[in-house]
Image (tube, rainbow, N blue to C red; front, side, top):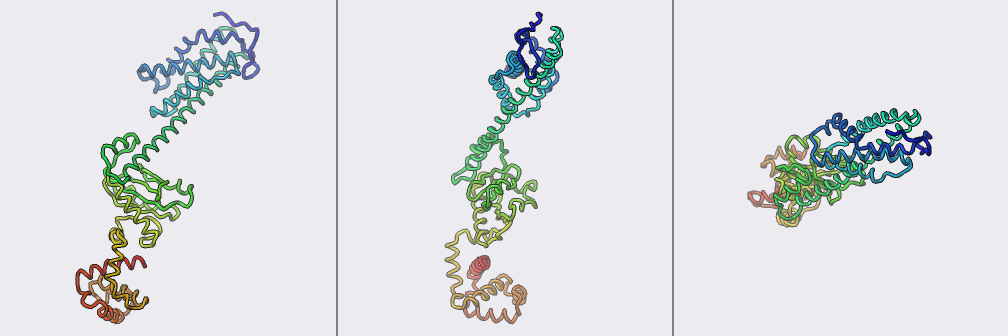
Amino acid sequence: MTAPTPGGVAEGPGTAPIPPDLAQLLRDGLEAVADEVEREVRGQVPEYARPADGTHRAHLRAGVVQALTLFVDHIADPRGRSDAIAATYRQLGRGEALEGRSLDALQSALRVGGLHAWRLMGRTAEELGLGSTVVAALGELAFRTVHEVAEAAAAGYAEARLRDTDELERRRRRLLDLLLGEGPVSTDAVKDLAHGARWPVPRQVAVVALAAAPDQQEQDRTPLPPGALVDLESRPPRMLVPDPDGDGRFGGRASALAPRGRPAAIGPTVPLTEAARSLRWATRALGLMGRGILPRQGVVRCADHLSTLLLHSDEPLLAQLRSRVLAPLDTVSEGQRGRLAQTLLAWLLSGGNVPDVAARLHVHPQTVRYRLRQLEKLFGEALHDPGTRLDLILTLRAESLRA
């Protein structure tokens, strides 16, 4: 090997002179060095020790050659740009992300390969009789090269992960829109979208409707159950929770869905293809919470309030029933009406037991009997008709909830 001539030096990262023709000398032996570095990486990094297929082998080889080329280019022109080689490592980083691997293996390969390449270069420098200042400058260039390609790989990896996350989020939003849409839901379509969204298909789901957050930051901090499909930008914000009754997914932690008192309603558990029905009931319950018919704060489970939801599922029809059944109470004063309605409901629910009614209302039994005589005059024989009594219970229950 011919020693490089010392004349016409190039300036390195420091001030150490590096013979300019050293770059060409190293470039001529680059393939042989690449062979050794590739073998070292395969021997030291388990992820690269597997039998290599054509594509994997080509990527590894290209990465080694490009890194060595960048090192030599820095020797030839320390101030030169290396955009093409950086692009190669960005692509390698993207490839690791898209294949679902961490960046650790590639970074380990860079460290192992860089160290081994530096040993080989040091051996070459020793054979050529280069001074310690030149060797130190070469070492600085070697570290600079490893740093540059590692940064490029990390940038490509982060870019691919971000794109992958965005794409995954778009696919999950499409899946949620399909499940909560108005039309019939195709099981095959759900399976196809779920596969692309990396979402295990559950047998049953429940939909949670949330009150709108007062600010975006609080909305972003809303805790999410595992595997939930979420759309916090819809009105109302909603999330679909897989297997809500299995493995205690809600358990005692349902209140965590209502940070800082933010109301939420959990729809009934339904088969996956009927998720829109759970959303409808959750949304209705959230509306009743806003009106005070259901508890205004915390988390309300529709399963605990089915009769109330049923009563208010058709408000105009309920108003018609109330107008007809409670018409006799319209003939008394507002104060009397409230007391008589309360007494009548308690009497109907207690099976006509006066002491029980008195205990419920915290009044004297004689007061209950007096009110019952008034009710007998207002309603007459209708109080003893089973059908009318059922209608009275329903309408008086709705009245008490409104109050």
